[in-house]
Length: 592
Image (cartoon, rainbow, N blue to C red; front, side):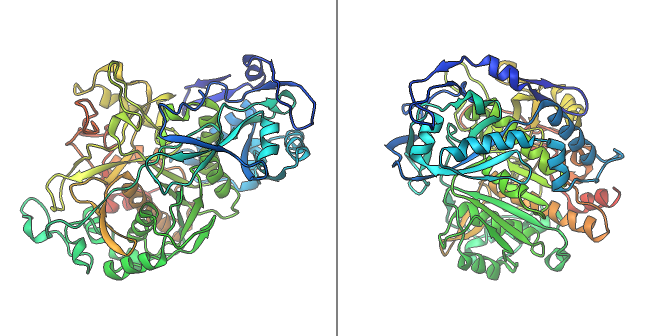
């Protein structure tokens, strides 16, 4: 049982593991646990998650996993409520400018001590899986296990049927291994385990659409703004957003190309999204930027993935001197990604993640709490985590419905513990000037998390203005997002190189690495001056709205219905505080 406390400085979720156990009905299951012939009461950690429904899902169930197939599971161990409160208190203190503890980030060992997951808990859970034949690796923070075992062993241990699932539309998407009808754990170990991820979550996958070059930029008037720069040698980029367009609009200094390497940054990639070094080299040569990668974690194949190459090309377009790490997972797994970065002794300081789902698609409160705990761990260590806000407007990936319309907020974008990046378009095509909310940019209010203290004043001001959608379609007391935005729309798509060709791509998955790159540059200023990294960004952002170019036009309806959130003066649920002004942000950062 988990409850949210909304006291300053932000929302706290406290989970009582004993209450959790009381809440679930104890059932005797006919399937054996890992010891042949043994029967024991069992608990389902994510019992509220409905079983996969093929009639309503884009994932199609295929054959059952081969008994000898190797299965890798991420097991989240329980963190006691008092430890979670200590972690969150520390997270807010080190992240909030003006707090005496601001910038006093923790080491990984200090995070482990704060979580205080007992050795008895780790030992009990590890031995339970190992006794079933699994290879078990304990994460440095002692709050997660990586378990590798055969499918037959996993099915017996979890009382589950593991099937392969194939996406019905995106043929290149890797198949998923999931529990067809949920899973359960023996009560002897369930008291130590929050969940086994992600056995019941099905990610949204959409192919990134590309656009061929349209008319040349010279065919558009620049009377309302600055002349469209010729940023890349390739003619196919003439009418698209390029590194030069971003530098002009967001005032990114030319010195960034050869600046400090003291900062660091990373992009997260999933689901078969690899990169080809030849594509990166072609983009770098044409657009005059260094698109080099310092390190790849999780492996890479010489296969072009437009999502991955978009992320890499544009975070490096903004911050070419900052070392870049690519963190890869074959499946969309927030937990596996979190374990990867938390296991690093010196992780990159800024992380851009262009993936997400609707809150409703996550279903499990335990899953979102485990992800939020990972975000707080990262912030306590001084890491900045940015997520794209989504590309379906207010209706999310599931749609608003037909008879009773309801907006669908995004997760992790609506988490209070990360920075959500929304999307904009230029008001006038091919004119570097004012921006408007991208009609498909994700934004809105969480149905699961309360408004955190850092944005309470800004959100109250927005809610006091008259241009709001019907109140029965959204939760006015929820965490509001996005926090900031950048160009993302289809008026002028981004010029990328993928599979050897130049093309235009749109989406908040373009905006997110751009904003992440800007904050990586700002971190360089801090580190060069002997100061700590910015860490979790939102308290700084909400204290410094002057660091952004306000967006006051447009509405994020998604384009399929009339309702959405309008961009207005100040913060709004379509574009946040607007788009970056590097000069103003640098001035604010220098004063910290």
